[in-house]
Image (cartoon, rainbow, N blue to C red):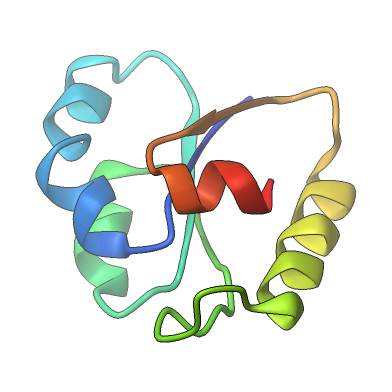
Length: 90
C-alpha cells in the first residue's frame, strides 16, 4: 500500500491528484488534515484525517497523531512525503 503524506490536503489534490488517477491500478491513500473529503476520495482509495495544527511551527500532538496513524496502518507500507514539514514530523 502507498500512502501520500502532506500537512495540507490542497497539496495532495492539486499536484498529486492527477498522478493518482493516472496510476489507477495502484492502491494509493492520502494522509493529511482533511477539509475536502469528497474531492480527496475522488482521487485516492482512502483518506485518513491527520489532526495537526498547521499554524504551529512544531505541533507535538500532530507528531503523535501521525505516529499513531502509521502504527495502525503498518510500518511496512510505502510512505511518500511531499512537504518538508511533513517529512520532519515523520
